[in-house]
Every structure is written in structure tokens, then in C-alpha cells.
Length: 214
Image 1 (cartoon, one colour):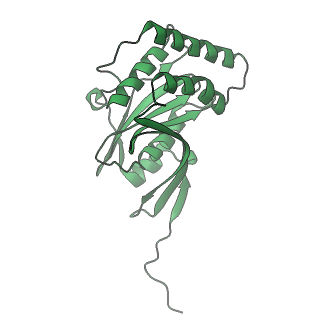
Image 2: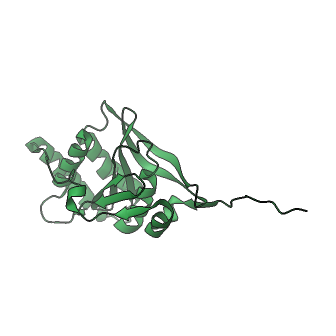
Image 3: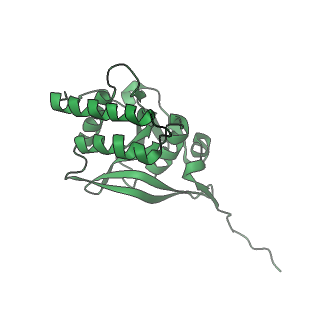
């Protein structure tokens, strides 16, 4: 029988198991270290009120109560830390709306690669992707969550606008900005830690509010 020609074998990967090298090789991903590329977590941050500080202090105390009763699971983080943060930042009110466990798929046709996954928390402003959130239990570090989050962000249909993401891994928070193009460029914020002296949730909250205005 004649050999079949022109058939492309497609490799399907799960977002939960990919690493940055997969995205670099298949989706032209590039890390940007220039601080001017991602100013949204640094500039024009609004002051927070005393009432907001009291709420953020209460969230921090709730986290300390959680870690004193291990194991600290992903759902517990979502309920006790992420949920109150998003509520306080008004992400549950118009013009925003929230979806959970959103299935996505991205394809690198020239590479024959498909990545499938499920976004933990997906915040939209009208029809625009406002924020993609990936949460992990305390045992996970930021690094494996970063590749997974970037895969989800690459699925944003608004390729002419920046897409923002947030990693919440235990008591650690990190914002991500992705700008799509021939080269898909991304940068991360500093890592905020609930364990740090003071309350880093103040800064996380300010950055959330700033990104909601972009």
C-alpha cells in the first residue's frame, strides 16, 4: 500500500506537567528582566484604608491558623486566603465576574504540540481576561506553577493586550505579565510572603487593585 504523506503527529501535553523549556521551545516564550516591562505591580498603587488593613490582618491570622494544622491544601488556600482577597479587591462585583476550573487548550501548529489544562480561577472584565490565578498547596514552589500559569495565559484571545496572572502557593504570591507576539514575553513581580515581617498582603492587595484598573 502507498505510504500516507503529509500526516503530522500531534503531541498532547498536560499543563500541570509542562516546564518552561516546553513553552520556550514550542511557543517562543522569553523572560524579560527589565523592570520597566512590568510596572503595574510597582507604580500608581493606591493607599489602603484602615478598614482594609484590618481585613488583610485578619486574613493573615487565618493563614497562620491554617499552617498550624497541616496539611495545607490548595482548596483551603483558595477559601481562606484567595477568596477574601478577591472579595476585598471588588473582583466579585461588576464589571468583573469570576469563573472556576475553566478548561483551555493552546496549539503550536508548526510544532505539532497541543497543551491542555484547567484554570483554577479566571477573572474577566466584560469579555477581557483580567486575571488568571493558579493556586497550589504549601508544598509547591513558585517555579512549577509558573510554567502552568503561563500556558493558561497564552490561551488568552486578546493577543493585542497584556494578560496578567497570579500564583498563590501556600503563603507566597507572585504576579505575572505576558505580552503576546512573534515572541511571547513575560516578567514576574517580586515574591510576596505572608511569613515576612509586617503584612505583605498589603502589597498583594495594592497590586490586585492596580491590575484591576489596567
